[in-house]
Amino acid sequence: MKFTKMHGAGNDYIYIEDFKGSIKKPSQLAVEMSNRNFGVGSDGLILILKSKNADFRMRMFNSDGSESEMCGNGIRCFAKYVYDHKLTDKEELDIETGGGIKRLKLKLKKGLVDAVRVDMGEPVLQRERIPMIGDPGMVISEDLHLPDGVTFNITSVSMGNPHVVIFVEDVENFPVSKYGPMIETFDLFPHRTNVEFVQVVNSREVIQRTWERGAGETMACGTGASAVTVACVLTKQTDRKITVHLKGGDLKTEWDSRSNHIFMTGPAVEVFKGEWPE
Figure (cartoon, helix red, strand yellow):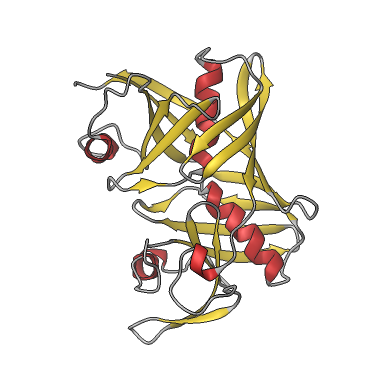
């Protein structure tokens, strides 16, 4: 089985074409291939599929085998794969995901995709749609009380997948590995949640660390950067157009006031190709 390893700002995935639907146990395959000691090593597996409603369909599985609705870094690499591997010659693509159809604009360099601008769609702010247990309404600067007695101020957003954004003073030294899994699996989130820990640098820059649902801390998270942008605006901490600094690199995001859509631009890189025994 042929595969390609790719990453977007260090958020790495394994890509496999499955136009014939021959992969019957993708969750199990994701766990095996994602293992960084006994497999290829990645944050997850992404399948490239046919779509009746868009140019292609993307299915994304985390390294623990759970399926996620959407991945911002993953979809940029998806676009690079289908263009660079000559599955399409379009420079604008519609990709079907579990979080809806996303429109992508490719930025080329010497005939290959160098970066991708993704229309991430409108953020979902209604508590019941994120989803999050509790009274209907938006979750902006709300206290979250953890069992160990610690309280965090949270803002919740869905970008096709759920996110909780927490602002901290020193994100580099924040114990993400301690509080990330506690919040991910907290009983307020019926589908679990991604967790972003964010330090605001100024009105145009933030530093983000992400605890990804089903994968642990990752080098970057595109849907997370989009959710962070929304949370920053809702809490009046930044402009609508910002640079998000992540461990794996920078993403440019904008919450457009006219369309209400989030736009995210970032790199897409092919690392290597290989074969996995079937």
